[in-house]
Image (tube, rainbow, N blue to C red):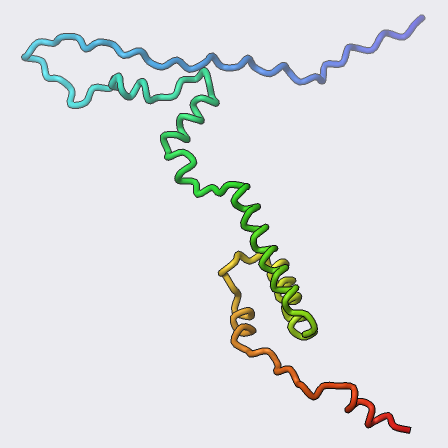
Length: 161
């Protein structure tokens, strides 16, 4: 005697329902002539032909999106900037910084101050012209004066044998 076969698995979920049919725009019906004695409603529910043309069609979503962008003002109102302009601006700023660094040879404190300032700007990601309060305060403080008597002769006096 063989044992009976197990029943088939019926724990499967039911199949999803079919998608709904595409929505159809109501076709405008021409107004029926009514007699002068019957009152007409104040507002007719059928849309005007201009509104029907302005309503999006369900066929081409990309074309509808592009049309909506054009109607909203296009790229002119988005305040977008060209990548080329940003690259040229960054190149110009880098060239100015290179000129400043080359002309300040020998002054260690000025070089250190310039490097730290550039590092602060890079970390904060601040835009040019939008200085934070710390940078404004640092700009008001004059750099330390360079001493002309800073030579090796003074250092040698302490170390004489």
